[in-house]
Image (cartoon, rainbow, N blue to C red; front, side, top):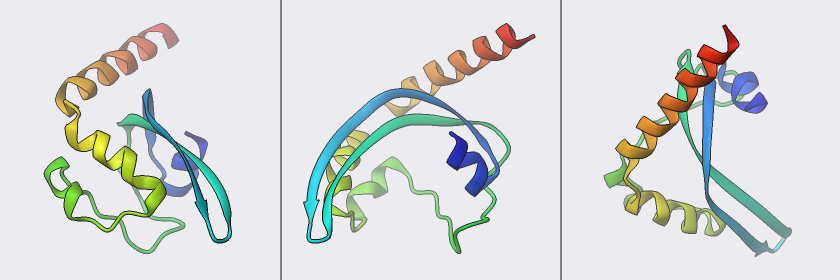
Length: 100
C-alpha cells in the first residue's frame, strides 16, 4: 500500500490473495503475490511511471503478460469482480467507521 501511495498518489483497500507465483527467469527467481484491491481515496497520478492504462476484465486475455503474471491474469479473467469490489468497499467503509 505504501508503494501505491508513493508512486500513484492514491489509497487502496487490499483484499484477499489472488495468486502466488514463483518463476525462474534468466536473471533470477522471483516470487510474486497478487491481491485484489480497490481505490479508496484519490485517483492514480503518475510520479514514477510515464504511462497508465486501465483495462477491463474482458481485455486481459489480449495483453502480453510476463510469465510470472499469467496465473494471476487468468484468475482475474474468471473472477466475479463486481462481488469482490463490493466486499472490499464494504471493508473499507467499516475500516473508516472504526477510525472515527
